[in-house]
Amino acid sequence: MKRTQAKEDLAAENARLRRWVADLMSGMYVNCVYCGHRYGPNKSTPVTMADVLKKHIEKCPQHPLSKLKAENKRLRRRLAELKEKGASDEQD
Image (cartoon, rainbow, N blue to C red):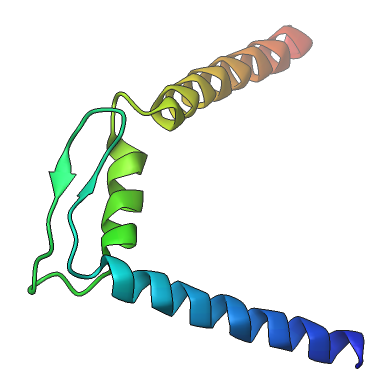
């Protein structure tokens, strides 16, 4: 089997397994393990519960990812300030 075919087979299997997980979670509640927020199955929501949880994680103040994103934002601001200061020092 060629390498390309193997990659295609794995991608197809990955897609099949993602659909399977989405089907399993479609009638369940999911909870954020960090803040306890609970999402329930909602027929008007056109996404899977896994997608709903992923979106929550991006905003959850108690999730470690939020802390890392805030630190990254702070460090990027500081880096921009230092670059700006360095540029103005070079002009003086």
